[in-house]
Image (cartoon, rainbow, N blue to C red):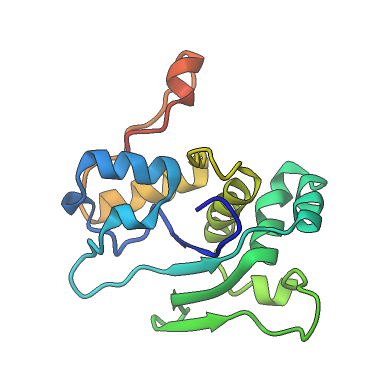
Length: 185
């Protein structure tokens, strides 16, 4: 995923994922590096995941993202790099495909009115993946930290579908344990 090519992001907490059908080793790797091929089309019958089609940030966009406060970095990366979204849920319970509006010139960040279409947890999650993919060396295994909001959403999905529970990280644990990718659903 890291490098110059476009890539897809599927939310770790997407309710379409059939957590029980994914071998634990593949799940652990997906949580760590967000390689969607590890999911292997293992969806709950009749469901499709939300798929974000993204591109890596350009050098000037990386500079812009680096200069933001921590809370704004993921949103800014999302605003620059999301190109299309398949199966995006709507407030009326439907699903749509969304395509980034063309600005006819140099790519610009999405405006706030366009960003409001997306859930904040999705913006933060996908933006974090974009940052990891854009800032990593192409010869290094990608590692994407699991945000607390993602862990909470993942727990909610696991509970709602009675899937494998999310292993919670104890904040008082040693730094070696807390830096390891979580054992999730």
